[in-house]
Length: 153
Image (tube, rainbow, N blue to C red; front, side, top):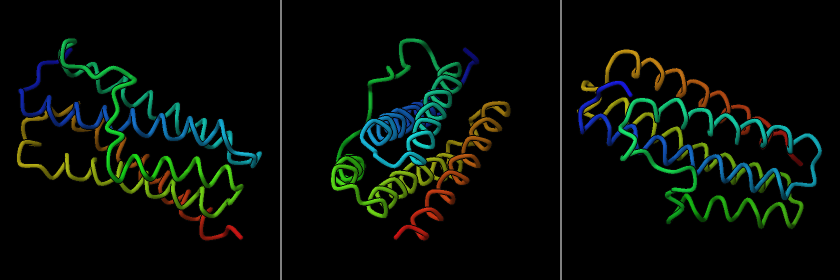
């Protein structure tokens, strides 16, 4: 663990939880989808989120680290990922991708909010770089999912 302040640790913990949400959402989508091209993509993004959470956990105390099954899964985020399951069940590609895009919107907003938070200045440089890089990868995933959605029939 690299020493961070309590405020910075709270921000990192929020990112771990949103990655847990993202991981579980994509895991559900991968298990349920019938579209052969979407399953590997969803598996990739689920693994990516697990990796992101693991990277971030190194920067907070062991006692404070959320477990992989600790998710936010409340309100809008929960509904978005449950809509993925419903859309997959109905085999509606556009609806699946729309729900995934909404989940990416929430993840991206969490990253942006973290980096723009007043307490972000307390995040050590190395950790700040990791968060910035992860945000870029989430942005790329969001853009890709959106382009697939826009081209879905």
